[in-house]
Length: 295
Image 1: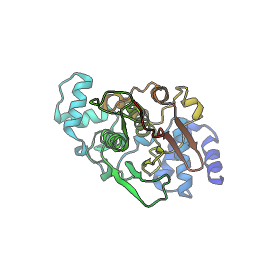
Image 2 (image 1 turned 180 degrees about the horizontal axis):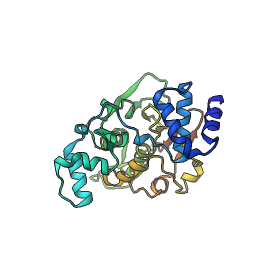
Image 3 (image 1 turned 45 degrees about the vertical axis):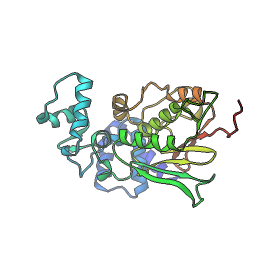
Image 4 (image 1 turned 60 degrees about the vertical axis):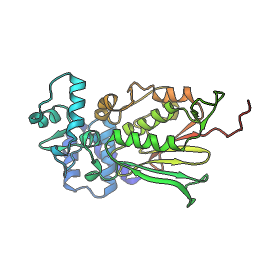
C-alpha cells in the first residue's frame, strides 16, 4: 500500500523521537495529505509505543461526565483512601484519565455512564441469527449494547448466555442445566475483545450468534508481531496499557495473558483469525452438536 509505505518512511526517517511531536502536530492540524495517511501514522506511532488511542482527549467531554458513585467505589476499594469529591479533577489527572478538564478515551470508556455520547462507535453490535450465515434476514434478537466497558461486558455476556442451551449433562432432573459453552469461555473472550481492541478504528465489536457457532469480532488485528499461534500459548502485547491496568478492578480480568489459555482448556473448539485484510480479529466458538441424551 503506497500510503502505508509513505507513512513508514516518514516516521523512520531520521531520529524517530525527534519527529514524534511534529507528526502529532500534522495530524492535529489536518496537514497530512489523506485520511489513510493519518490513520497509518497513528498505527505506526502506536506500534512504537509513542501514541495510544486510549490517551486521546475526548473533546466534547467534561469531568462531570464521570459516574461519581462508580468512580468513588473504585477509588476507595482500590486505594483504601477517603474519597473527596472536590478533588475529582486531581484524581482523574493523577490516574492519567484526563487532562485540563477533559477526559481521554480510557477515562470515558471506564468511568462514564454514557461514553457513546462523545465517542460514538465504541460499543457492541449483537445479533442472534436463526440460521448459519449473517446475510440471512431472519434473526431472534438484535441490539446495540452500550455503556461503559463494565456495562458492555455485562450486556454482552447476558446476550450470549441467553442464547445458549442449558443441557442436563448427566445431572439429576432437578439440577439446573449446564451451558453448552462453558461460562468461563464467554467471560474470557468477551473481556479480551473489550480490553484489547483497536480504539483508533471507529467501529463496533460484533457478536454474532448462529445455529452452529458464536463469533466475537474485534476491530483491529493483533498488535506488533503477535499471531494466532502465539496468543494460544499465552504470549501477549498490550495495545491499551491504561485500560489494561484498570480492567482487573472493573472486569473479570487477570491481565497476565492466561485468559485464552483458560478458555481453550475449558473448551478447545475455538478458532482465531487475525484478518489483516479486513483489519479485524475474529474468535469463533463452535457450538456442540445437539444430541438427545439417554439415561
